[in-house]
Image (tube, rainbow, N blue to C red):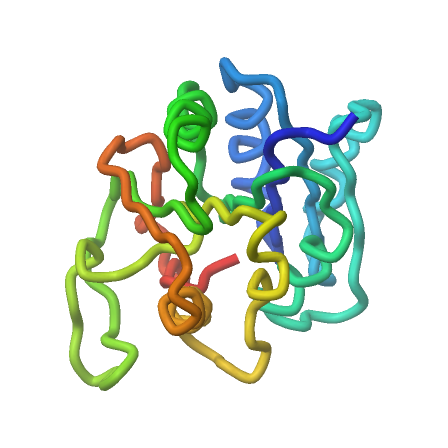
Length: 206
């Protein structure tokens, strides 16, 4: 049976963090989901950490050779998802237990092609401006890809990341939804926890 949510996690050298991310999915008070984890050629023991989840038939783990980048890794996961709505989780972030339940309540009441927003930021709250990376902007002024919920029935053709973009590929996808005049909605229910305490944590982090 097709799940309501398909979740994609892209990971590269996240052995110390990815277990918490996956456990936050398992701890959801909504169980109508599948999880696709894409290991992007990790050189640490990320895959060993993930072994404990191999027996869960709701979780699929695929591996890519070499570090191909977060956009390509996410796209690899997107290609095999089966759910009604596609969403994401960065491998060093986590969901609060009501994350999916709060979104299903919104999506069942509204016709939405892309739902986003609802993030709690831990740590640094500014990022380089995509239009001028010598400047910084607050994350409240960004769209955050981890919070996207994409209606795959209406918008599958738009559900991919541009692999030629090295930074802020989330906003590039969002801009395509805007250009296509898709139904976009934003929520302020802060159930996605964005961990900005790591040295290499940026908007396009895996």
